[in-house]
Image 1 (cartoon, one colour):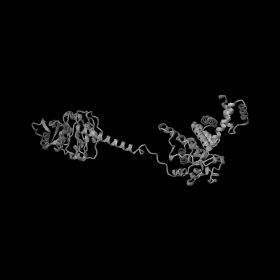
Image 2 (tube, chains in turn blue, cyan):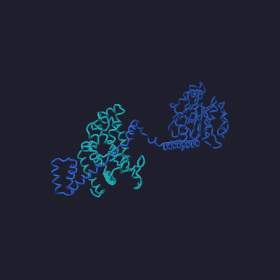
Image 3 (cartoon, helix red, strand yellow):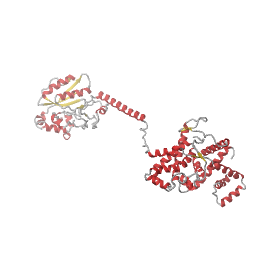
Image 4 (spheres, helix red, strand yellow):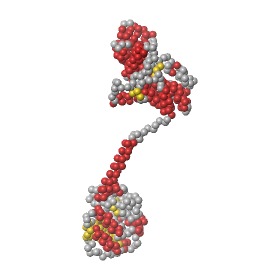
Length: 321
Length: 228
């Protein structure tokens, strides 16, 4: 039958009257000797007649009106995958809130275990970790979740002047830097008065802004004399007080020691080179007794049994525990 | 998809039924302003004439509805296809460059919409059970059967309707690309050139598809009717 394929196409064309005389003659010659193609011609003619007998449908009366009504209204905007599913969007939002709450809660719990959280609204200056890498400014809650693997608890020293946002932590070799006004009002802080190992860790070139401000604000007198070469031999050795805590709570003690130092008129700080938990400060001689009393309330003091006879207006104190 | 007769009035096919067959004035004899041909109406529509698009719809809706109906085989679905086609054309009227007639351009859009509807129906059928006895459900309720015959020979009418149903069913059995050519050529009597332009294929391809479509239809009808 495949030999008839070409003639079948001619048959299809003939039904439309689309054959030229040459094609018509060829088809007639083939039909004269091929009964199958004759039958196909008849059937195809009948098929086309049946096909053309299919009725037309009339458009329903509402069709035009509906098309025009829809054409007049602007096309609806493409909806995002969330707007069509308010339930899904609500569930996603709820999950986000829940996740955030849990993260903050866990972070706070870690913070309470590691170190006391600062009071809300008070600025926080976080000490650099022992690795010496500068700490990045982070919110208190997140910062509290930071490295807990460090054997040394975190220290937070509240700056003298309140600020509404956290300040970036200074590099490892620097001291906390309160605002200038606070620095002017604060007691001068001198790293030179710390033990030699600390003084070595803070070379002359790395003196902090705070130090310079303290120098400028503090009245000239014995402090300046202590820096002079003649008085170098008489540099006052810092009073190192070792506190045995009752109960043992090194993390909680940091805040209490800092509070005691602050109450005694000192600006508490920590020396980066000093190992172990400690806080230092320069305390007015008059307030030394008060400081020792407060420290003894935290635990038993070692190294302070014979209360030292202070020399000068202030005395450098380092409290370790 | 229902293959039974539609609930809408049927009119016998006759010469000059389709507007483009009458000549360049597409609106002649259809009660629409014959002085404004499609190009003028399209230009007026672009210019913001609110009535021009309505005239285009009135002029071409029947043609597009019959094309869609024979392509998808279901009148409700065909009405949806026609709506979408006219709306697509309305939105894309600025892209109509006039290289083809508006009727050809609109028919191409309608065919595309019909293909989409067929694809959707295929996906839908894949997941739903069907019943041979259930009433044929349309979007606006069950499709009503033909109104009672008023002619003098109900039996002949019933037999004729049964044959038509089989012809329509065999048309749906054809592959869509063959069916489109058969509908455009044998039912809508468009020229080979226009069909080639509309389908964006060569005229030789149109003739080949037409031949194969007709042959398929013949074989199907022989099986469905017993003999031709």
